[in-house]
Amino acid sequence: MFGNRTRVATLEASQFSAIAVACSMSLALLWAPGCGGGGDCIGPNGLTCNAHGTCAKGACVCSQQYAGTDCGQCSEGYLKYPTCAPDPCAGNDCSGHGTCADGTCTCATGYAGDRCDQCAAGRSGYPSCCTGVTCAGHGQCANGACACNTGYAGDNCDQCATGYKGYPTCTACTCTVGVSKCADTSSVTLCADGCSLSTVQCTTYCSSSGHANSSGCASESPDNGHCLCADSGVAMEFAFTDSCQDGESPVVEFFDMTKGTQWSSFVPPTSGNRLFDIECTANDRICWGAWIDNPAASWGCGKYCGQDQTCSNCCYTCGPLLTIPQISLGCP
Image (cartoon, rainbow, N blue to C red):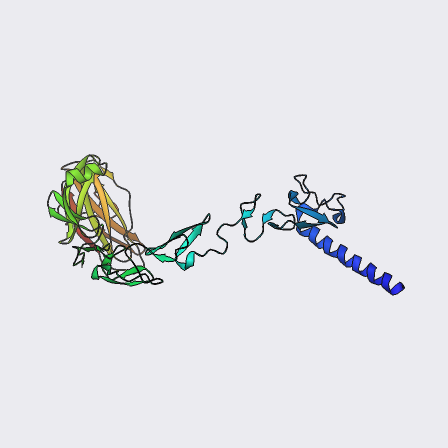
């Protein structure tokens, strides 16, 4: 007799222990009797188990379509809390040939039917649905879709892929997007889409870029050039290379010797070159100087250009330069 009472007491203690754990894990149950709140699984919204279940010894027992310690979410197979209506796509995988949304299948290319379980018009041979599909002779059909050969694209491989041109041969394009070169001193040839080359006057190019003036097309090399644009005055461009690469980065500045002004200094990269643009007044004398302080060394007209240093081949008359000067800063 006493043994049975002990067993019941032990069972009830175990149940209340479980309730205490549940309380500690859910704010919605802090008002349950077992949590000391004195309520009946009533959450902050004032509803018992969010009105989607019943309370048993401080724990929510949710209705079929609800889940969670406070019945605050939909159970598997139900959607859109708080209504938690049955998922219309449950069990419908569209036969593996499409995707289901709101109960409706959207079939992949080559398939049709409410469950994508038949071939689309003009195709046969379910489940491959490749009978009668030629892929225009430029691919192979598998699972209802054409896998196109290199250079071809489209549902039936009947067009050129990006980077190719001239269907049906679809040869690889030869220009690179963003690369340009000078067509002449006043116009530039651009590669806009990887295939098509177009020639544009620099005045038009600069205007479309929001600049008032064009200083013509300047070339770094026979296959690389671009329009020089300015908001006012004349645009000039120079390419600097730190060819010494000894860890000491020289500083470069440009000086307008006519006006006694200068442009902000910059540091060339340790590899490759850096293009430096200036805008100047036509016919002004423009010079550049470069230097390092430790150990002291200089190039061009140096750090104190026009004061106590002179240079050869470091000064220019402000005006269009159709070949960009390539200036190498060697080891001192």
